Image (cartoon, rainbow, N blue to C red; front, top):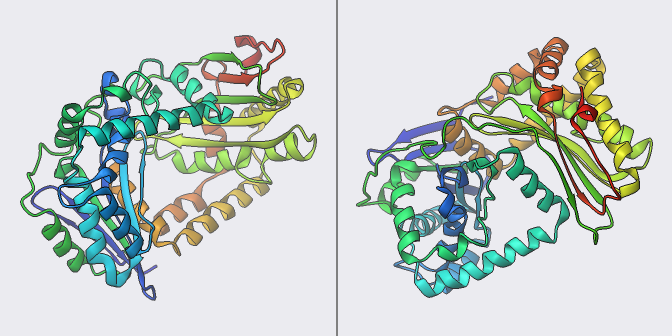
Length: 426
């Protein structure tokens, strides 16, 4: 594959990355901040997500209406999101509109007004967003379980904050956090598509002219050391639900662990697609669930593997036993050559298909810069996947699927459903 990726680190600390994609007339551009919910103190949990919302209420140069009109004029694809480890603002535009798009993104990120009246209105919006989570059982279980899995730790706190913290985000608090943590040395600008690198560097320099350099990127300074997963058994009764929702979790390789390639293939075999073991055993063979699967979540210093199923309360015990049976089987006997071959083909195809998307490629550039500090090419990833062996997958299973670290969460009208530690033995 032709490498058309370039990187420039500006004197003010901003990293600028581009990937030229011949044949396109569009560009996906974005600004990512090396800050997410894990970098927040407990009393301001949710403030990154709050700022992600609040910047659209107006800047020193644009009203909220101006932002909306300009977004529509550019194509209407301006998006923003917050995770535990970063906050992103992205847009996809025609290549002729890159200059306007970059200026708009820079204005949003660096010049928000944070008027008190606007902030109070956005607080109400986010409180309504929380209610949506509470009305969505799988998301609610995810938040409850996450809090129990990382107790009293940043990774265990909800990205959107809490009913107690969000109303405290006044002008003073929001401005102070933004000034400190959205410093330019914590910014990554990435673009993919029909983009000229030198031109983007020029646009970034112009858009962020006069910027303070900040204190430099300070990854994870607010974490109290390495996250410490627990192994909770969380049973939450919610009588009004028709379905019971189940999650099983174990530790998993982090995003920086070289075992992540083998782990991704193992996760795919267990529950990553329609040919996976859980899909076939729980849905196809027994018809116990419509939604069932498994996936790993990899942070920069820790990972979590989750199995999820939504089923009738009467079938919850069977779904749990079938899930545990597959974990035990893989620990004892690993996977087959055919399963590994299918998982590799699926993963490699996904990578190759992603190369057609400027949005995926820009996002990958930014994430790799923030998490890895370097670019990892598709060729490198594919080569790692191809070299993965059955023995490596079994070693992953034996390392991470241990009785003492298996965690469980269940939510619904559970009809007396009970689980003790002995039942989770692998």
